[in-house]
Image (cartoon, one colour):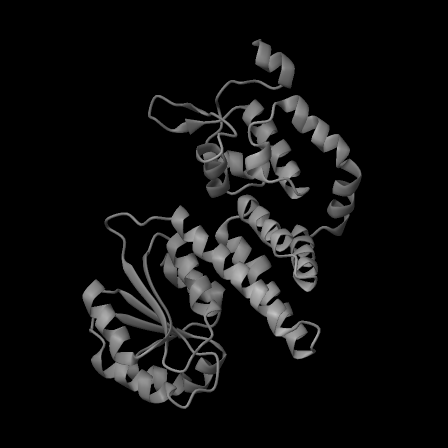
Length: 309
């Protein structure tokens, strides 16, 4: 047994592939890779075929690191700490960790702490909270279990005047920055299909297409994100230039321009480009979508399933 094995109590024999590591640690494969490459948290060995192989000691270290991050420590601060110091952090935070664990829902803990920081306009603490979540969970989990519930709660608090406009702007800007930063983790390969995402003139709600764009990137698509309030002819022009396989549009609010904008897109969109439409307002146009052979996307789960296919 090596000296390191004697210290950690775990074998350094490489034997686990990334899928097994994900199951054993509760961390996604993407998170494990980021912790390894960006922060140097672990150093797996390679098989003869070049695949990464992880040891029991790697598994134990990743579990300790996950616990430290869940307790509020930034991964960049703890990634290279020795096992003894990670154990010290664990013992210091054991009581608080037990309290969190009793809730059974770490996502709600993150949401609660984020919204509490926003309520007192503590931008740094709010940013730290969602940044920690980004180091723990894959983007699809963040979107489904944190971002969407947070946006819903912000809307409710604003409607009941528990949040002012400034607090709403703080929260949405932090979430927008988080989602945008996650795109860098998923560069497409040369053979990736292209998806264009936009809203038409008069539609200002951004988060539907922004979260959709991130999910598309995680599924290997080449994402061309145009943002909000694009004239229909500009959307069509972009789809032609990039030879888009899919155009995704979000309709959230009642917009008198929407029908004419969609009609322009339907009449001019290249035949090879499929059009997917989602959002609360899209349901009102279901019959028209069927006539022009557009796809109504019910929710993010439906979108994710279509992207996989």
